[in-house]
Image 1 (spheres, rainbow, N blue to C red):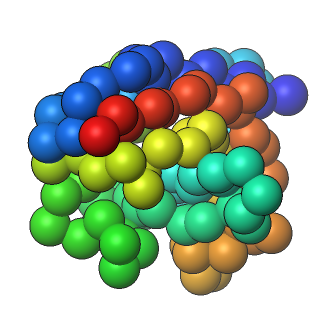
Image 2: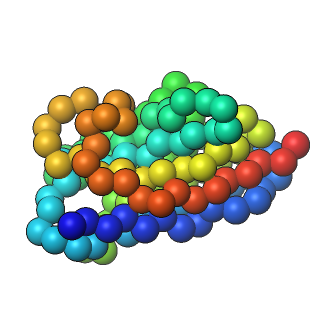
Length: 124
């Protein structure tokens, strides 16, 4: 079993920054990609960003391009997401996810493991 533990959420004013972390532990699972999704109340889960573990290539949702940056630390099995220029519409629960097989990284259904989520609230 793989455990994903997110941290770094909180309350921030519009224009501020936060950095989320996701630490992976557990079995010998080797992720093809790690991703971040978010879900606001009453809305569907939305793709935010992803990083392919071996190549380091990244993908971003249109609403966060240029503001969010995903990165990884192979030695620590940890993925980070730096969030700058935060907007009230970024308010959501942010989930970290791990995908074991090759394929598209923007669809939640393709991920095998999920963290418990961390709340990000951006005040106006």
